[in-house]
Image (tube, rainbow, N blue to C red):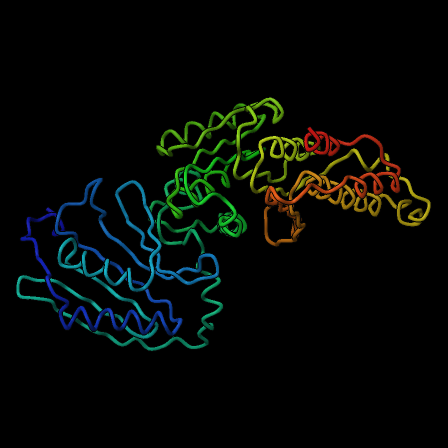
Length: 408
């Protein structure tokens, strides 16, 4: 029988001992000095079960421009998270150590503490570690604190072959792992624009293999601990079937998938967050139209190629540019995204076009971020939209449907 499974008398700590106090003082000093310590609570006094995590870890993360301490509760088949302040974390530690766990470890920049609860009291051991040369500055370390960290097995990443069962990211999947975390940062940046209470309704258009759909569900339901109703939509029925099976096997509440065209997939119920990552050709415009009809609070769209403008665009002033096919293609792409952004402005959104780096499809990508304006703000007139179309010799576009939706 493993030592952790032997029957052990429950140890009860009623007051903070000198050892616990020194342990927590070291944690606070490291945290306040931006040294980013890590704490592990292990050796549970009761056998690990669905109700009792086999261990709990604690580390600082940056969340909404603020450093907080994130608790990760490691169950046999899943992990959950709690984001707490330093004071709340110290209080939580005292309630767990000696009551639920017999061992605690603190890993600092140049030291390690081991704290054990025994029948004779608490025992604290300290070990100095030689500081590594060329240590990176704290700000660099902070950027590596991903919303989904490496080293902790996340069920959907394990199932999708990105992580091993121990939480190690496979070497061949490092780029995908960084991509997922970068995308989650973008979604997390608009989290405070979503309703603070109640279920969050999310739609992901053109979800494909759904790495990012599963990641967004994890961000909202596990990291932010919200009830989520998320629909992934894609035309490929075999891909959707695979995603449905995976969501079922992982028991991910509120995560649903459906196959078919965006225009026909769902009723236009209220949506809080609409996502579209590289929906091909006019599928991006269909996704934006759907989102406007559903009164989405936030729209995040990474537009893909759109071929309507290219054969139509004509302007004498731009003749020297448009006679070169590759330059004409770029102008057509820029014009398309400008018209998309302006159509969303007309529909009542504050819209930005941002550039972000290191996603899968190209070295640089554009992101259309649209946040619904308060009801007191009137919608913009469509004059600038029409003027740009006229100037470029463009007639009917898929983006016109966004304006039609906005006027209804």
